[in-house]
Length: 503
Image (cartoon, rainbow, N blue to C red; front, side):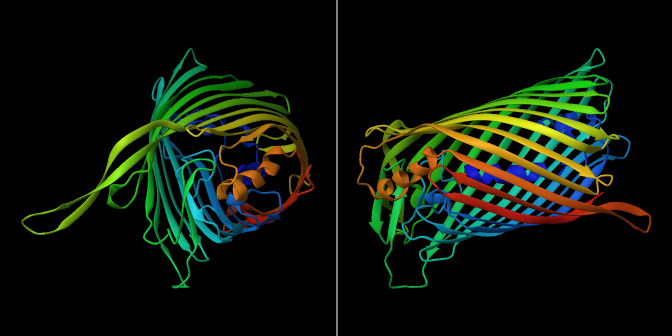
């Protein structure tokens, strides 16, 4: 989902261009909720609807093609009474993706290898609710204290036989604190726990007499295949992530920065009926971020760096089924037990390096008159399966620029952007080239991993001040579009419109 995630992030970042100079905020980008009150951002809020359409043939087999989506999001930062600052966001996503196969889970790439799906291409409906709330005290002497909570509930439903329905529930909590010394120096510390549960309830059929191919996968081309294997199949993934973040910030009148170091350790349990476990998944995340804001007169400079490293592995279990009968009640019970553990049978290694610079001309304290930005990123991905040995490696470099501005006091704004992606190190080595997953998924996807592409983006928006019973706000409408063309002559088009309110 790299392309989809990138496009969504780009659209979300565009929402503030020409509206408000949100770049003043640096603590809101970190996990540490106690830093909310240390930012100089004025109170603000936004709520909007977004309708989008994505289509094209530049996509991978397991992520699908044409997608229509409706999104609602509201976001608010404000001071609460005398002692607290608060930030909250709520979003609702609803949509449909077409032409997707071999994947009935939410994370098909660079994650837990024990995924599953049918060879039949079909449509998938998705719906997600996402809540993120943060609360921070004002500075109490040299200290401030905060807590953030998050909750997400999702649903992914296949609309063609064999019909699957996967539910998602994520919740997390992160307490934190900061300590300010020598006036302008602040250190922060925070801890985080997140629990993620993804569960396939069951498969169902409209054609009760039909039999379909079903694949239970264990990494790259390795899988177990069966006709009608979806019948009675159940599986859930429960992931526990625990870690924390340490940060340092310097905040002056014209310059401020934030340096963060984060570490997260995760363990994922995969279970089925009768407590069968195909394996277990372990991961570690390392993140470093460095944000800088410098204001000189009407110019605001933003310079950000980030490095993210993810290293994970999966153990595979060979299990046997035991049946016992209670001699008193005659009740039969079944349970799987592990006979052999194949340690680190599958590994995943990812790295993402990002650098971003933007110079903006300010109009007052909250409006960007114009801006110019450049971005550089480099990512690498490596998946390995051992005994038999297979490997998939890919990566790329992205270089892009963005130019935007507004007229009529910020009522009309527009942005244009261009990005070039250079693919490198795309390599696929499979032990079994005749595997159905190799023939129908991995080998076709190599065209996606190996392709260079150019992406062009544009948006135009208009806002209008409205006052109702003494309450002033800005209503806005925005139209945007992206067009991607790859070196192998494939393309991707993404268009949409947003309308909402800024208050």
